[in-house]
Image 1: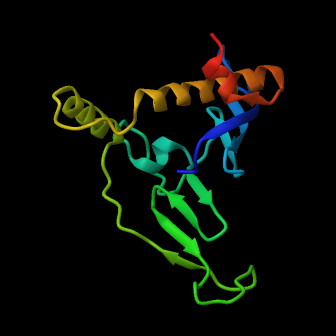
Image 2 (image 1 turned 30 degrees about the vertical axis):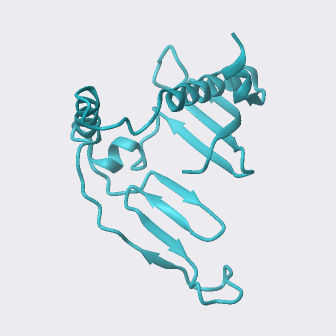
Length: 167
């Protein structure tokens, strides 16, 4: 949605659930196109903004009716999973904070994303559909996750490309 991630920074901690792994993290994503993104992740805080609470995954989680992600751009923003698009009136010569925002809401078919993933996987296995993501996409995603872990452990800025090219 935002292009390729080329660097990450992160901090993490074990806040309060007694897990053997960190349960809270803040992540800064640097994209190749110059954009930046932030992730706030926690398994130890009550909130309505988790994936499970926002997508009604059918796994016994309460649907809080809240969006859990916002993609914020220079010409508009998108709230997910409601698919609400926020923007200024396109006819304005000089849009700005003092002007009202418009919100375009789109109907969203609610379903269980895990069931949909398995159904797609079965169609791919049977040769009826092409995968939505490539093996290369999966490898790059894994490299980003590994970079976040390394960045949180070292406090450093981790280059994704180095994780893809190092043996």
